[in-house]
Image (tube, rainbow, N blue to C red; front, side):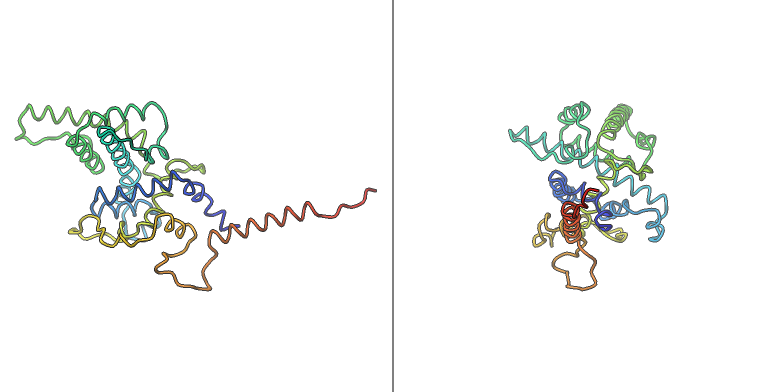
Length: 288
């Protein structure tokens, strides 16, 4: 029962169809967007606690950068990818029904529909420029982003400054709807950030080969999908992760393994039934 209590928060977040659908969508997004190995390593490090980062020799400044990449930049990129794909599908006369990120993590209010309308006006080149702006925003201050070289023509400087101001305003709007706080919450209440962190933790275990466990070399490039064709299904992988078991192809029978989530839940269910039965069937003392 204590083991079940420890994973109850993860269960309430993961055992939802929309969340499982999003996890599949997210892993597909990582493969399609093909971020650098360093960026994917940052996504893994972003889940580290301060103590874990210190043990790995990661400085506080770098940990903060990794958390910002995971909790702020990444969800905005996922949001943008989802909206752009929906717009492109509507232009082709198709309907995209898998809006998993917005369904699971975003507040369902007017801001969401306003952003959907604004991004619907973006063309491919403009989308890429905004993505580059997001990645630059992760590393640089707003002043550095609006700085242009002295050789840039004045007219082009004005265009770049105007675009930077517009992207900055749009970034703030998207951040309010789609991003999470880089720093862990100090309250005991679970919220959207905890939901995102839980999903990222399991997604990184399901797609372990997509997220390096150590800092990649400078020459490391994007995602390799050569070994993905024979991987188990997502639902099977999530079940194994939630039950605390290693992947099926590496699992070995051991008598020292701790109880799985399923077995603990079953034991708790049986114990509850026995307690209820004992209470209802307990002999009553005669009235005095």
